[in-house]
Length: 292
Image 1: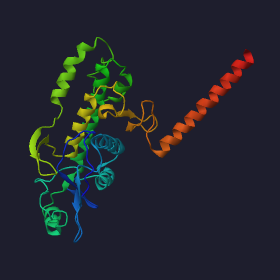
Image 2 (image 1 turned 45 degrees about the horizontal axis):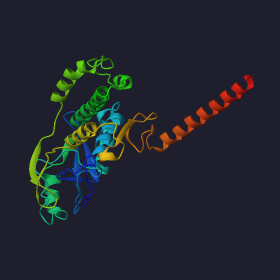
Image 3 (image 1 turned 120 degrees about the horizontal axis):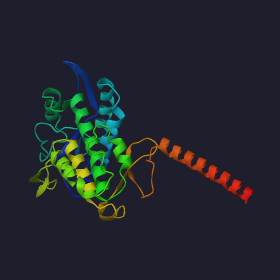
Image 4 (image 1 turned 180 degrees about the vertical axis):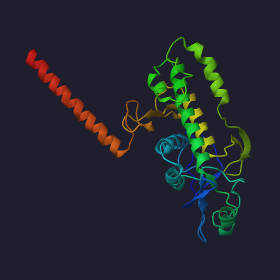
């Protein structure tokens, strides 16, 4: 069982989640349905969490949305299945995985009945797309709110919020006039409740009551924006989040000046741009010296 779990670099427990190797894609009543399936004698991999920490989960879901945004449901389903196979099934079954049964990881009959017969690990692409879009929009708006409250320029952020003009004046001051809109938006946003439960050691603990990866992602987003930006990266578990100047995806920065993600193609583009900039500077210096 994978025990490597921390949510947004903070101590918050999640119930067990399952990662399946295989999914079936079918069409029912005009909708594309994704169903986890197990072969004879197979069991899923169980995780304490999602196979990655809360910040990476939040960003990976936003980037999944960007990758499927222009695709139809049939094609988008392939990207969604790949994400599920790499991390975890996005929605929890109607009942919790019985994690305190000593044989749960090897009980093939239990998993065959729950997965192949009851179909507890089934969802439709349309619902997944709606949840991804909602998380993506909340992410852009909340990150813009954070910069606005810190009196930073939000022009670039506003350019990405294309589905509404509600925040068009957020680059103007005084900032206090925007507090009403910010509060109203936060009150409408899906939240996460807390509950008393048992942690992985069988001890009582207050923990977030997650029902899907989207609950966990919003919790990570909330914790991220709650830490002041002027804290150094890695201080008080703060991470830096930026939009890659090459591919446009969100990523966790390794340093305050990082502008490109770790994708090899983006690194190549960064090096190409640095070379062009260095060449232009050299030409400019030669011209300046010639006229000096």
